[in-house]
Length: 248
Image (cartoon, rainbow, N blue to C red):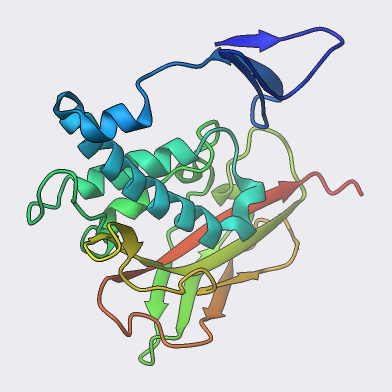
């Protein structure tokens, strides 16, 4: 892989060379084409294991892409390559499926919800290093409303940021994420419950001034319809923090 420099910038392919723009690195990347053909991988027994891996990789990619869509309203808080963390987690969840043969294993996040707490959206400033306040999360009896409570929150001491700031804002996003499983009829991976893209909601505190006085903060967000009404789904609660110098 190489970087394209100079006055002429373009995106596309030229014989066995392709050029694309990397939005994260903000550079034009040059790479060569290669690898076995699609037909050869599908038909040759030599590539049986590779085909299994490719098939399961698709399940991880579908699951990760949907998770990214569900949390896109918080995307501006992310930094760097965090999608690879989604894929790594999806694979870890997939490996826990011992009921299906390799090549057809599901990504059942509903059975490994505790692993979702390991997701990191900002490797330079991991959330647990920046935000030291403990919080409680509650779910209403009708499975529609999520309440996050931060009792006695003191922004001066419980938001640890390397530079000075005057204002802060908390954001909470809730989403319902389905498992992905192999569908024999369609011959592909599909969500166990369809139509989850819109099962998300966001709420934020508005900008608050940093202070040393403790306060109780409560964030509440609701789904339009009850969540967890069908098996094979998980409710995700994501909390983000923004800081500002206050200028402008």
